[in-house]
Length: 215
Length: 215
DNA sequence: GCCTGTGAAGCTATTCACAGCT
DNA sequence: AGCTGTGAATAGCTTCACAGGC
Image (cartoon, rainbow over all chains, first blue to last red; front, top):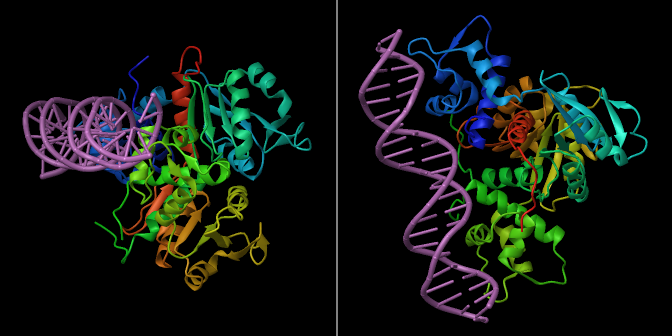
């Protein structure tokens, strides 16, 4: 297993790959660091530094070969085997997540959904079968799921997480606006809209004066 | 205007306030930094450092007075006047956001929603009036809105943002998984689930071995 | 004793700047 | 001329450790 890359770098590498696959014309086979930088809204030096983490190297005067770069990023970011993910909490947010990821990523699939509401269980929602919450541990273990998305209300997040971890989950994307306790060996990524909106309000409040486009 | 605090600190201060108001028993009027730290899952030193940014100081042996702390955090984080926010894109995600923020924050209100779909316009959704997209600039200017939440599909994010900025918006919470170009003087906060899930997969994939609870 | 507030140290992330290549 | 790869410099963030207070 290769050296552990910093978390922020991983985030940007994932972004670069997405931009290359989705927003770069296939008929242009090479790309310069400053072009990636422009797409990702970061500095060219940042891009080159990040790409040191990959096996892929560019050549001066030509840049990076896009297809090779995409492949190198895949080798770095993707798990060895396709990843099955569980989604817990099929409210508006859960459905938004299901819709968003549906068919988006060739190697990541939301394989099961769970909800406490009895009327949601037993049928597919946005193409994913929804199970009752009681079967969570069972189904997760059965499908060999190691990754989960938590889109339940705050109070339920910790108990559900404990159950997921006990069932073998090692990575969690958490939308609940509460800090979760996890044992070491489990990774949690938080997307907290309450905090995010407060940050926006704070920063927007002290941006006085006129806007100004640069370059 | 007081000194600009680091972005990360603002995020945590917002979290501390939420934890104090929602998860601390009112009958306990004082709290130690290590108790805040435990709630927020950060180190006690981090909490004390963050709280240096506030006017509030604790006393050794007693800790911080919770009510004073909440008030100090409010003075720091909240805008002078109550904030009206626009939400653009009323899909599943938009509705999740509307539901989430409904009545949650006494000083932040989602005051208008917008969607291209004609059948959504003209009626309230989750209690917020939904306007057709064409009236975005007009309504935003009319209501004096300076903050917006972007829950539109990726391709529409940049054009909508440009329109919002032209109409006077200075802070944006962006859910679209694309890097946005903004003029200086405008703050963007990204909540990118595509990147977040890839990070989870990456990290979970290299967490080998058993889980272990500490302390 | 155990707490807060904080300078200083340590660590992490980003940017600079330039040698070397094409 | 303009690019990559990277050591060195810088900037930013977190933790340490301890003086001073309760």
